[in-house]
Length: 179
Image (tube, rainbow, N blue to C red; front, top):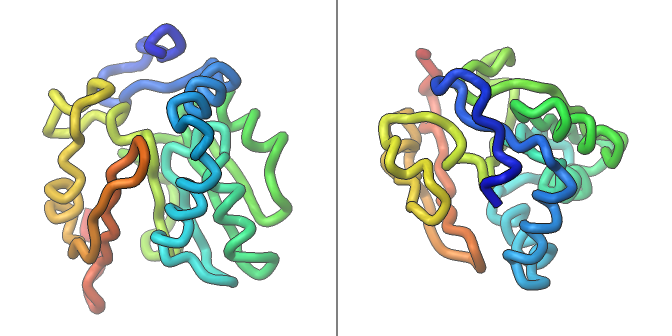
């Protein structure tokens, strides 16, 4: 799978996946036919509801964003960001009417604070530079709970799905992001 990861960006921005169709095939195979079921579960775990505004960070080809778009319905909105222009182009071609996609990196979101009800990210943390550099390799556990707690979130739930671990974290009421 590493043959389609681009390393030509500065280390502080992370990696991007430009061979999107290959990544979709590899991801489908990795889930052993359970991808739809797992992503349906992720959508439910996200807490997204009809009318919500959702951000999917590291959206890749937009698979999760499309599932979220169905959940939030026509009155909701899903925005996907990814550092790969190829992935964003791929996602746009398959987008639901209530989805938009933009090129961007998680470390520098050009979006107003508190403009989303739900934020999701799957299969992207190991491509994003952070203090736990050893966790960037595929197969290494990214310390999700530590990252969420350090960012001021409270972890409400954690668990495992086929191929994925997850956490559900929320920002305590009355607190604002100060970064």
